[in-house]
Structures are given as C-alpha cells and as structure tokens.
Image (cartoon, rainbow, N blue to C red):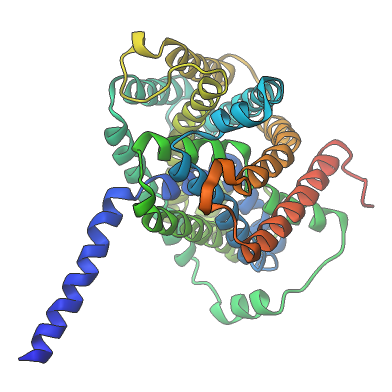
Length: 423
C-alpha cells in the first residue's frame, strides 16, 4: 500500500512542476527558435552543402554560448521586471542608449527584409508569386500583434515553433550515417582554408544576435514572471537553446547527406530546398521549403516587435502587445513601419539577399560586443540585481563566452568586408 502511495506521490510531484512550467514557458523557446531565421537556415544549409558533417561539433559550443547569454537576459528580466533597453538607459545614460538603438534599428530592418525574402523564395517554390505570399504574410503578422493580446501572440509563436520539426523530418529522410556523424562530432577534422574559416565563423556568429537579448527580456517583463518562478524560465531558456540547435543539426544533416555528396553548391536556404528534390525526394524538399516560409513568417513578426519594444523602452515610451493603439502609439507605429518597409523592399526592388544578410551581420557585429559587455556589467551590479548577481563560476563561463563571441563576431565582420583577409 505504501509503495502505491509513494508511486502516486512521485507522479503528483512531477505534475506540480509541469503545470507552473507550462504557465511560464514561451520567452526562451520562442526567442531561440526565431534565431533559426532565414539567415540562420541559409548559413546551416551552406555549412552542410559545403563541408558535410565536419562542422557539426560547433553546435555544442553554440548551444552553451546561447544558453549562457540568454540566461543572463532572462534573469535580468525576472529580477528587475524591466526590458534590457530600459536598464541600459537607467544605468548608462541616454547617449549610449541612443547609439545602441540606432544600430539595432538598422540591423533589425535588414534582417526583416531577409525574412520577407525567405517568404517570397519559399512561396515561389510552391508556385505562389511573391506579390501574393509577401503581402499576405505581412498582413497576418501585423494584425496578430495589433489586435491580439500577448498571451494569444505567444500561443501563435509557440505553434510556429512546432513547425520547425519539418527540418528534423527532412534530415531523417536522407538516411544519415550516424556512425560517421558521431565520429566527426567527437573527433572533428579541421580544414584550414579561408572558406572553411569564414563558414565556421559565420556558423557561430549567427547564433547570438542583439535583438534576442532585447526581445526575451522584454517579453519576460511583459509576462511579469516572479523571482520564485525563475527556475521555470531558466529551464525554458535552456530548452530553447537545445531545441534550436537540434533543428540546426538536422538542417546540416539534410544538406550534408545530399548536396555535399552530390557536389552541389548553394547560396541560400531556398537553393537548398530546390536542390533537395531530385536527391531526397519532393517530400523532403517540400518540408524544407515549408520550414523556410515558417521561419520567415515567425521572424518577420518577432524582429519588428523586438525593435519596437527596445526602442520604446530605451526612450521611455509606452510599449506592450495587447494595448490599444492610442495607449502606445509610437510602439505600434514603429512595428507597422518595419513590416511595411521590409515587405515593400522585397516587392519593389531587386536587392540581393546575400548582400542584405552580410549587411545585417555587420550591423549585428558592431552592436553585439557593446550589448554583451553592458549585460555583464548589469548582471554583476548589486544595485540592479540584488543577491541575484552572477556567481563567480558563472562569471568565468560568461566572460569567456562573451570574449570568444566578440572575437568571432569581429572576425565575421572582417571576412564580410575583406573576404581574402585570412588567405
């Protein structure tokens, strides 16, 4: 009898953990999954098509780096109840905030253009004109935020996260050689040529973008997560870092097992989706394209929202999803402008997606070192964080992560501007 009671008490204790976790879940998983946007998918596709399984080991480093940085943003959001931009303004002044916001606007606008380009390319794979797919997607993401409450928008975004499973299925459909993959993950083979170095830097460099810290901290503040519930948000953040790189893992596998073997070179995620069809079948190709469209739609909502939150907080304006337009006009105007400009550039210009991505990476690279250093200073400030400052051991990991990320990001900028610098 006691054994049965103990069994049910253990089951009940697990459910008591799951229920509050489900109430908190969202900010970490959504932010991390949006990191696999059109630019991220393109990068991982190129990694697999160009170098097979050689760079999969980097995903371990990427997961750790992402978890460390986003955990700090999450903790600041829970402890202070404020967004990152508001904390920067309060602690470092309006001048630093102004310059940071200007660079963030430029970088995020370039990224938003890339997301709409991904929607256009993914739609055209299915025979849908960009003059239909882009306006429809733009209107859908706009109306969701303008009319929806935060809880509703969060549920929609979590649903979009589920669609990333298409990449996992695409990867499995290529019948991966798991023995070889394990060998190259544990005992990586380095190729010290310029292109390999550039691709390796880009793989890590696309992992952490400044919008991510602003977005996650803002929506945590929006949800008003309490300190007593932080362990659930920490778990949400770590699960997000793990899941997003599982998706990246299968994107690389899908392209390595087909395009790399066939010697097919690509320049974008849409190239990968098209090239997969004769090699892995129309279903794998179709799933890859669906994932691309999903990533574009999800990111074309989140990036403008992230920008609107950050700028509004940075300048002390009202901001919140679910409020009426008249209650937060600057927030909604900025959000709307981002979507209109991003969609119109893709519809009415012949801008190169590769150039847009390189430009956004450069802008991100300029801003990221500043944001990461400011975050570390804030996380170690007792006046801001109280007893929740970084622990000494965590600080070592955090500073190493930040320094390595800064070095690699600066190298990414250099290779973008001067492609032959490491020759």
